[in-house]
Image 1 (cartoon, rainbow, N blue to C red):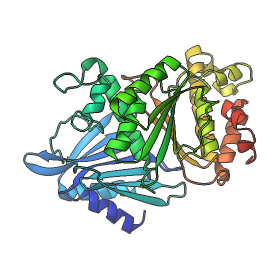
Image 2 (image 1 turned 90 degrees about the horizontal axis):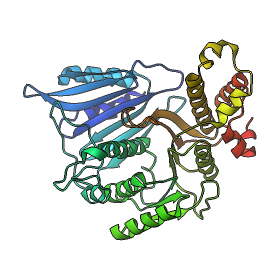
Image 3 (image 1 turned 45 degrees about the horizontal axis):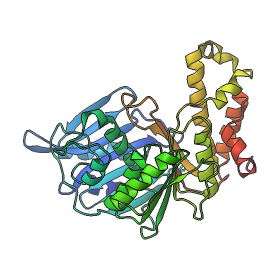
Image 4 (image 1 turned 90 degrees about the vertical axis):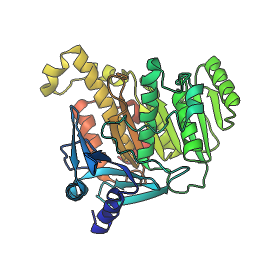
Length: 399
């Protein structure tokens, strides 16, 4: 990272008067990191200002507090590490830094919408939520999440956590910082109960003040009718709901974002394929059950070195899940997306806790490295992903 870019990050994080938090996450291609994520936030320790660095990996998190001088040195260490995404929030706005496959940094700055975020120096505090009873009371009440006294109902706290984690993942893409005046069109496939559909609508229109239109799509007509009534009751004219399948859905304007959360088996592939064909800027999918590739695996000669692993039914199934999502991410990269697979919410909240997050960054087929990796993965496992079949020539023309 260039020194000028590091200085911009330092200026925001070390600004005691405005700094709220920073998140360093992901790893640049071909590099290695000891931590999956590092979160920095200000705290008060013995009446003195410190920065708390929290380091997360798959099994644990470790937090350490540093005084101003030591924190500056520790921050320099962080900016020298090959993180792929950096998000910094200040009271007056935010900075999103994303690194390309070649290590080039792209900066997106956004001014704060509405009242400035307050700085919380408490040492032990509840995790920051994007939607809170204070800024989203009307939505949370309509969703049945608030108690009469304005607290979060204990029996739906997991849903509250899931909503906020989903919005955090949307926020971290930094994908909608450009052309802020242009309308946004989002399609949520398999929207089901529509908690996340309505939450995304509220976040975009009432928190970010964007001209957003959100469409929920599901095969259940009675459910869609109820959601239309809810939107009408709330006065949310641009939250619409349509009955239909993912593969048959038609729209006159290509959506900027495609969402498919917990769509079963190949329905996730249908959603990804639709997003790719439309050239959607963002595709977010949290897969559910995945059987199609497992059926192929059961009919072919699998890698001999994996025999002892794949001889166990549950491990065979999980390997099928991992391969399915690996193929999906690989195809998205070939088609010009920056794709990662991240934890959606902690495993204690839902067993289906992985999300494929893709942001369009280039034209398809530009990087031969992704093509080679995809070919090698197919040759190793002797299978053809369903997503390749769906895309057909739109994908194979680049082979």
